[in-house]
Length: 138
Image 1 (cartoon, rainbow, N blue to C red):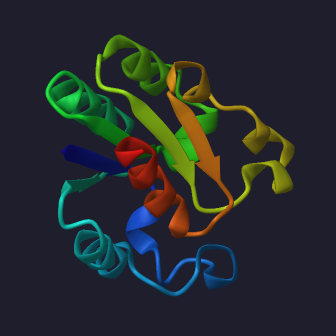
Image 2: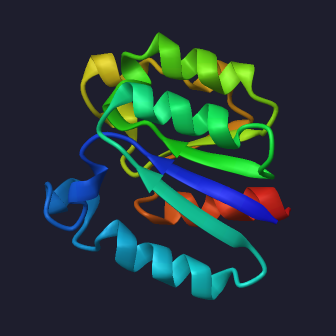
Image 3: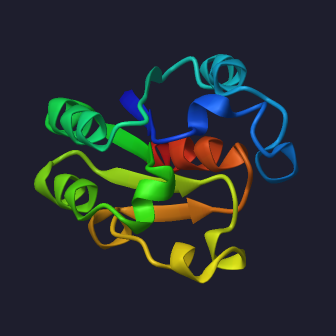
């Protein structure tokens, strides 16, 4: 099984950014834990703060991988383009969020990703990624 984790803007700051919301673990450290926990899964990781680069990566892997785990971060609520890219590819996409976006500002309650996603996992901290991997193994 080959899965691509794609993280959007500001998630490169995990471990430093708002630890009360996002925790104190960097994503690179957590990725190492995921690889140990799921040795049967080939996990690849990509992060960008740039919308077009995220769309490009979705298109690049969206026909060859077994799954995409996408945390588009703030672009979830603003990017029709990323939402369209998710709908355009054959690879199933699980939308994840570290925080429960429905407990946050009103504008974060809308997702342009969800209509094209296989499922949505939010509010379980970094464990949201773990749950997304498990959904592909299920």
